[in-house]
Image (cartoon, rainbow, N blue to C red; front, side, top):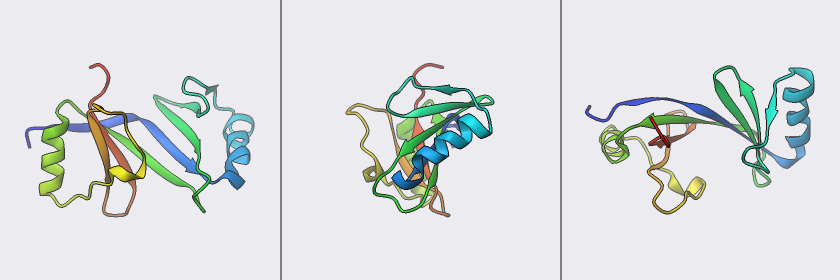
Length: 120
């Protein structure tokens, strides 16, 4: 494979509205993670070297975890993943025009964003 893929730093937890406030309180008040709001209304927490984003998802009935992968060559990585039979699912959440990345699912149905990072 010519397009190397590595782990990213963002983890997104998509939480239904009826569980959202309690989930925020759990990470902030019970666990004691440091919150940040750099991308309000999303609330993030420092999770060691990673960032845990808690996103309210009114149309979901249960929470999901979404992960991030980095590549320096998204078209090459997308080609590699397609050849391996990995399903693209770009309709799960819109991305800005010109964004160099996309959404995939692993065989267990976990969503991953594969993207070129802003800077290496």
